[in-house]
Amino acid sequence: VAGSLLQFCESAGGLGCALDMDALPAPPGADLGDWLLCFPSYAFLLAGDPAALAARFGGAGLTLARVGAFDDTGAMRLRADGHEELVWHLSRESLTGLRPPGPPGRGDGNPPGKGPSTRTIVPSALT
Image (cartoon, rainbow, N blue to C red; front, side):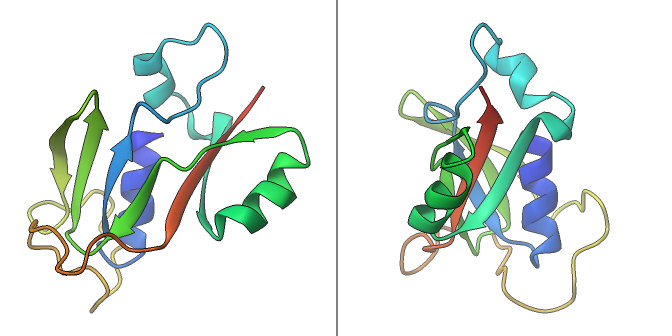
């Protein structure tokens, strides 16, 4: 999940995100560490209107949760229990090399000037 989110951020132009680990749904009995590193086809990362996503995918029996919002920092952070840690910075090191040229990501690692973006990241897990 975390690696897929970083690829998502990079391919969207170098966006950043704080992944809210406390909100991340995981299958019953799954270890959170294992879930974060699992094969990507076991979870989906979606960006869009939360209500529309819930209607479409929640109606199909998938578990959905808002676990973060994109910002223009270029920094991937993990947030849990009130703490946040930087895990990757796309302006310092590319993950895939597939970042398109130009905006939207500022990529300097500073917090966004006007708060987080309204673009929502919604992972879903089969239950």
